[in-house]
Structures are given as structure tokens and as C-alpha cells.
Amino acid sequence: MTKKIIGRTDIVDFPKLGLHNIDVKIDTGAYTSAIHCSEIIEEGESLRCIFNSEVHKNFGKTEIVFNEFWRTNVKSSNGFKENRYKIKSEVIFFGKCYKINLTLSTREDMKFPVLIGRQFLKRKFLVDVDVENVSFNLKK
Image (tube, rainbow, N blue to C red; front, side, top):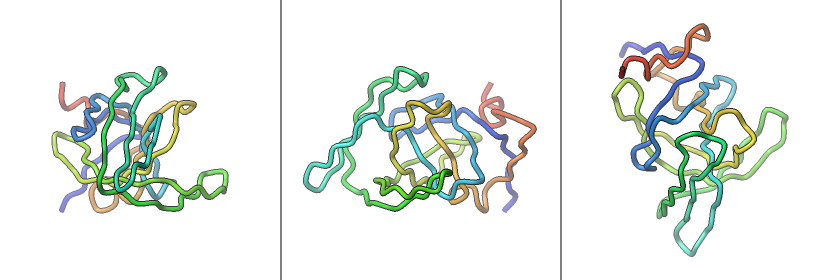
């Protein structure tokens, strides 16, 4: 399989989450991918997540209930371990829909609401840090 070249940032869709034209940072230093989630409520066997942001464009108030989720430990760039919820979803790059695991985190103070990590990138993409929005620009 030939790997596609992506840049250090892109703009993608998460169709199952109802999120479109979302700015993402490609982060080869991160193992897992993370998405901004403003509110997480565990209710019995389900997880109610509210994806909302006044800072990140195209993050209107979207509420999704997940029946399949789990918890995982994530070590941040500052070395602290955090236990986060993890969900399965889909993301579109280059017009193709890929399965992706996403940890849920409050990223309101971050420039990008989503980080795409190595776990997702491997065997699919090569990162060229000199370019941006390669997948998105091909849609135009």
C-alpha cells in the first residue's frame, strides 16, 4: 500500500460525530489521537459527550452518546499521566473514511481541537512538515 503524504496540519471531517471542517494537528510525537470534548458524562453503560467550543471554529454544540468506550492512560508532553475516555469513530482524509480511536480531552486552551497521533498515522501516511492542509486542499 502506498502511503499518502500529509502536512503538519489539515482540515478533516468526523462524520459520526457530526463535526465537519475541523482543524487538526498532525503530531508524530503523540501516540494516541485526541479530540476536544467540553463535557463527558458517564451514565450507566453509556458515555454522553458534548462537543462544543466557542474558540474552535466548526465546533458547535453536538451531543453524542457512546455505548462502546473504555479508559486509557495517556502521557502528556509534560510527562504527566492522565486517565482518559477513549472512543471509536471515523475521520475523512483525501475523501476516504478511516476508523480512528480518539481520547477525549478538554483542548479549549489549545490552538487545535484535534491531535492526530502515530497510532492512526502508521501504515497510511507520511508527514511532510513543510506543507499544510494537503487533504483539504484536494477537496477544492
